[in-house]
Image (cartoon, rainbow, N blue to C red; front, side, top):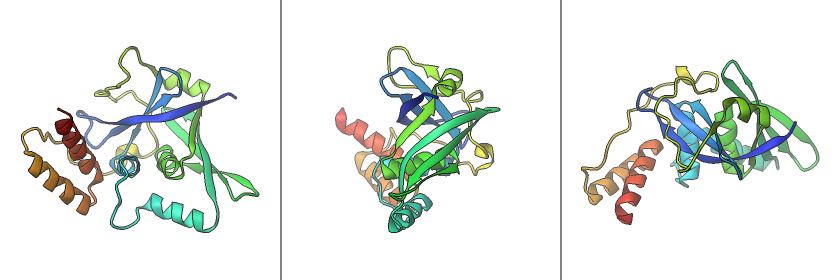
Length: 204
């Protein structure tokens, strides 16, 4: 089957489904987007690597990377290979330089590792055809109603996170202070939102 290369477009927080995030993947050189519902912890694991934040102690995916590198194992690519009853399935393609192995993984875990190993992300055409969304015009994708979007196993059972807060009334100094507090507390999703607000202010 033909593989389709994907990039991470972003993470979209649901205002209507507390604790849920949509991981939005985009077709390279195409206009289709593949949103996948994931939990807060998985969103955090992906976001902190994209934002290049450094946790005070290694997170699970960082530990996996260190362990793999210690034994000279590299994650070459990840493939979202199936969609069954609204649930995505993924696998890691790993190599030690001599042998290549496929390891089953939740999609969010696979992508959290892909960003750490700079591995390619792929899916198959039939998955994009059935679950993809075609974007016209602006590339940014808002996902407020995510009830009908496919997800990965156990996404609904994960602990919910605090609802996204508005920071428009805070001063720059207050935003900086809260950003440092969030990083110190390892609240990386909150830190990412604070950083976005600071970047927005600085660009105005």
